[in-house]
Length: 247
Image 1 (spheres, helix red, strand yellow):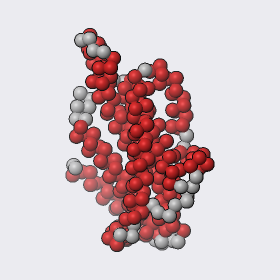
Image 2: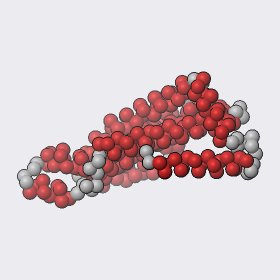
Image 3: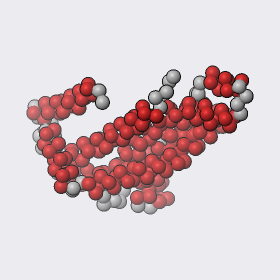
Image 4: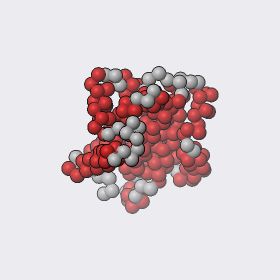
């Protein structure tokens, strides 16, 4: 990690501390960052939030796995033929542009007030992101490499396996990073409002209702850290295994 990446967190804490010190917002509703960080350390150290953290992560991982299992093969298949993709492009873009929160009632009717509805809506929204990016990655593979393979007598299957698939991976990883972040957002939001007794979202709304403000901020901070680490994980994997990207 480059040393200047620490500037962002330090700047955020400084702005937060100054705003709290100047009481731009009532200090009851905006505690200083050190109080919040202390509360987060306390929650993690006592294990009070660990169960909720794992509940949220479990739902995110499951929805993301489902999204990959469906979205990746579909994206690769659609990307092989631009005509086929264009024929269903409206459907993909329509649902991709529809806020996932607008689909909550539909998924509740289908799956009921259970974890299934949370996971299903997160998987559906993430799947569309993966399909879109994977298909575009395949369709926008470098034509020169495809042409060279055709001249050398490669079959369509060989071109897809050895060129189009690998050429699509950088764009696919962009989709995966966006999809896992979206999964986390949707899961946390649904935990707040759709029948559940555990999860970071549930704890955030409970803390807000009972006016445990430092706890609320601490869990929001933890949620942000989880999202950042998930994104960092995919960036690390991408740099490790796609070092040839753009070459």
